[in-house]
Length: 486
Ligand code: NDP
Image (cartoon, rainbow, N blue to C red; front, side):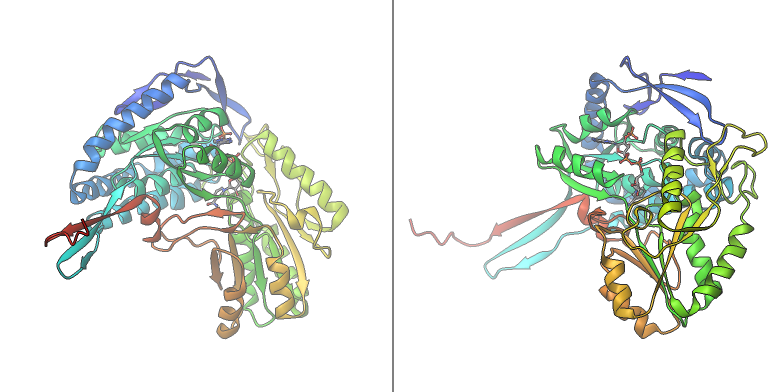
């Protein structure tokens, strides 16, 4: 175990935190303490804000072409350190290395490359007004705060910083306290790529440190990835200084499988929508509605494939199911499974595993599949954020659309069918910000990703996100005499 005080990053280098509060960094696969990390104090947050303010002056004055070049260079360095950073993500999150190596770091690098590529194309418009004209400039907001969840730490840091920086802003990022390490590595990557000091900063700590950011008068925007309850608090705190907000929150998304679907594909889709990253994915399709006539064969195929999943030490490349993030989260997931057994029929899984070689203290749970009849069951209504799939049946298209929409959430949805007219008709009625037809959880950087309803507001990725990190200034230019009544 290492005591680690230098996990803040501002003015272009690692800095020591000065508060008297510490938090534990635990490897979820072993339950062992790896680091004790000191939280940022109010003075540290002030130092990060000063750093971001001076970084902003330099960065926003640089040409967008130069900014884009640095972001693309950062993407290149990130990819070259893929394996090293992936291993740190695995130690922090408990997710399988095979996932971290193929998705997490690359997905972050994709965002840096994408926004680096379009930075120089940000532009305003010209309006011909006869004797005068006007034009608009797309300007940065200033200092933006990014607050991350623990499931995709480096990817979230990149998805927030890439569009923010491309627009000329500076960012202060607070990772979740359970996964503090990769944001500091990203900061080092940015510095190595030539990012001016102070443009990307990291502060560490719990909710209190997040609040120092959301309440800070010099911070103009906050982008949070987290729970719905946290989103409400962040929005309320941000309201005091009327900050811009982007909220990427939780979900309980529906996945609808019609009777004409390719059932093997639908099974693969349902597993991707529930068991990837041990089910710790916001957009997961955890309410799987299957047409009654194909339910038996769907379940047979699904159970057979789920039995084959390899749960194990996340650092082994053939592991497909890793450890849940923390002991507290493990208890929460196991409680839902116990509750689920009273509300629905457990078909497979849901067991705590303490026999994983070399990982006896880890937080492992076997992927669980429930068959439910009651829409009101807590495992059908509430976000579990673990490997727990609930299968329900339906008869009619209209009925399943109504049931799919009967939730406070609206993050994502999926439809499996060979009838594309039906697929489009159904997704047009679904109250969800991200819909997949005949696939699930695919999030290429080019397409906007973001929620409806209480799953939050705003988008990440795609061109749409540039609007969330910039403001439009309109400039009227008089070319004639003023037409004055005075
Ligand atoms: P939390 O809401 O608990 O925490 C998210 C972040 O907010 C953490 O950094 C946390 O700090 C911080 N925080 C907590 N309270 C406050 C506050 N009052 N003010 C400012 N910051 C605060 O979420 P989890 O980390 O547990 O992540 C899981 C949740 O994230 C799930 O609901 C999941 O659905 C959602 N999520 C949404 C995604 C999306 O794109 N829509 C993607 C990924 C996850 P600390 O950790 O130190 O408490």
